[in-house]
Image 1 (cartoon, rainbow, N blue to C red):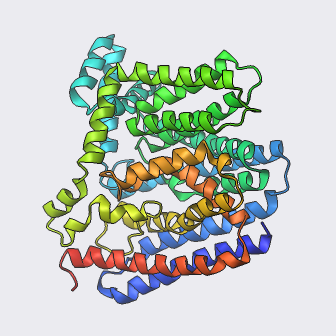
Image 2: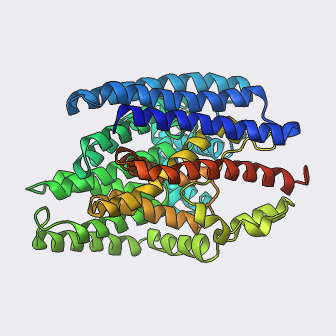
Image 3: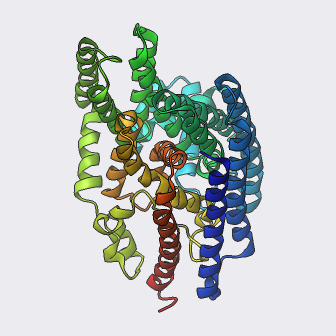
Length: 470
């Protein structure tokens, strides 16, 4: 990709954000964001687009070993500084070293403190009894058990686990690079890794006490290890075991992610060339994956898979009920039939004061995904045009199926539930950017205009739904 072209994309990214924010602030001046939230959002957008361009410009010709070293060390440094800084910021703002209005985070922390006390006193059986009685299912237990282990060994300070999040997130950038380089090419891999390095979602969740960073790390590494296993001339038992353990671990954080990982393995096996995976190897691998799925269905995880599908997919009216309960207008339009077409883009950036503090703080973070979504969607057309669909058999199938699942679930407008698809979205966006043609620009500029209108419309609905404007 020409340096000038990527600079144009980044300049446009900042300009579109400024236009959207200015339009919302002028149209709804009584509810415009306060200066502090504008500073958070504008700072996020400028740093993301500015730093990604700078690093891509300087690092794109580096050889792989040097690039991964720079990538990992820079990612770790940025995330560590952010974790320490946001720890004291939240402590000053909320009185706790946790995000605004912490609910799940606080529950995870308090549960892990109690369970770690049981562990130190030798009541291991009681730990699992407590988890079974007070969690929604297996997908709630993995993160609490992880925190319990850390608290039992190292004490209950919340800064330590966040520094581990920083380490995981930094290595996830390397895993994205390796996976993309093997399936696509170096220029796409480097751009995707640099986008991941500065992606504000990935940085932000290192500073919270939610389970998203660990889940992203496990899922991305599981995909990367599975791809590596397929390409080995001699399949080593250790690598296969690692892939299985990583996949199983995701079920302890979110059932849907584990399900979709296994589904993406099936798709990959089916569409892998014979030169890479012989018919005999395909048969053995398929049997292994089917055996893993069958084993899971015989455990409590199997019941949870069925329950999750029923509640999240077939009875998907959670958002309608939630907004009706809050007395908001237009609540009937919050179901999946209305929201699903924008699944790659959602949730839209909140640029008015009625949003909760976390959403206001993250207005720039939301926007970055809103903007990059165009390139991720355009990638589908580019892959077909260049006959590269097979290259996306693993990461693409995982990402698209996850996005579709979210589109028809209760979580279609819940930002953190979209995160597992974000590494794949960055890979797809990078592929589209590096192959952008002159004749593609009308569609790009049309999208830039539409995303401004969508953000303005979304903020209008937030205000109008509450009866604040007409």
